[in-house]
Image 1 (cartoon, rainbow, N blue to C red):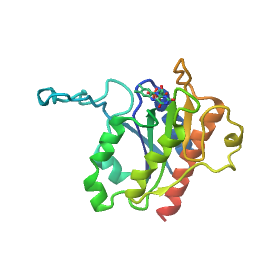
Image 2: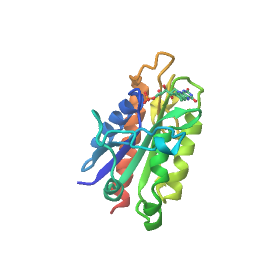
Image 3: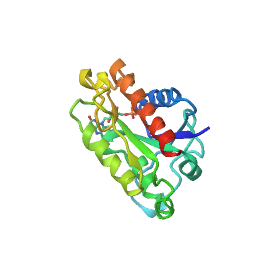
Length: 202
Ligand SMILES: Cc1cc2nc3c(=O)[nH]c(=O)nc-3n(C[C@H](O)[C@H](O)[C@H](O)COP(=O)(O)O)c2cc1C
């Protein structure tokens, strides 16, 4: 059965909850299943002596860490990250920066892809983060998918959810629970990428 990779970093759980909604959406498409994966945290190194593994070999809970074969085996992918100063978080960027071999061999060329994020504040950079996450996907030859306004929740949402990708506004209390509209839009993005993957792999 074709699998769609849902690859994310999440420290507080907001992006992880969106990832689960996206996975539900993928599962709603006949013959498609989601493969949830995460990336390890990274630590700033201020002295060479401090260079060392910053994460356990497997996560203590949640999705397993991504492996290179996940990229090769997926029929499509979704990338998720919290917004950090209007951009994606370093652990996801660190992982993407290590994908030179995949870029050279065209591992992701022609695969549909989408993105998702979470912010604390409504205007704290969701759109800049989502758009910047699409850039490496374009370099890798992915067929980029957003969320069309034919999704009723997109015109209705008072929180996250954008044409550039799925999102959640966690607020000052960092509430990880997506609103109904945010969850609907995340599922819609998952369904869309999975549907496109089915069409493109014919
Ligand atoms: C270093 C740092 C930078 C952040 N930058 C932003 C930002 O630019 N805009 C914003 O609204 N929230 C920002 N946040 C808040 C996170 O994006 C927000 O809490 C998000 O929901 C966390 O996702 P997670 O629960 O999946 O880790 C920042 C948080 C940290 C720790």
